[in-house]
Amino acid sequence: MGEAARRTDRIEREIMIDAPIERVWSLVSEPGWWIGDGDRSKQTVTREGDLVVVEFQPYGKFGVLPIAADAPTYVSFRGNADPSELPGEDNSTLVEFFLAEKDGGTLVRVVESGFETVYPSPEGRADALRGNTEGWEMQLGFAKRDAENPSR
Image (cartoon, rainbow, N blue to C red):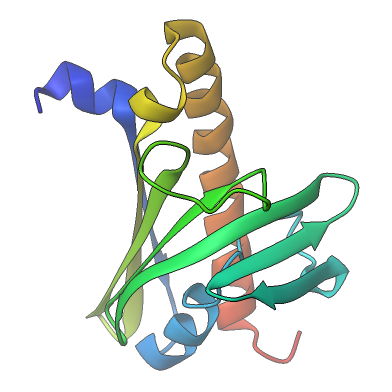
């Protein structure tokens, strides 16, 4: 995939968290932890077979499907806004978290890809990329806050 296509198909962000990799792993390996406003007590999480349904009002229900995990360094999920439909390559983005120990803390990199398939129109894709980029900045900040202050 060329560089121009990568810019319209994926988001990559990273953050350094001053916490042990195991603590960060316990957070980012939870399906759907990134849904909402950072207050996980407002989430209702249920399982329907392999699918994890995360409800966060007023935004609704989201389906999250765990794809792969290699603790404590990699985990991936697919998710969509219609939990009645199993997330797959044709209807959801792939969210991957890469963790690495660094300087006594944990470097977390998130990659979300598949926007060109899910959002075929350039305008819809641009809106989704913009919104999700802002969302990942916010969610990684929440992950840093929660991992560095586990008594919260």
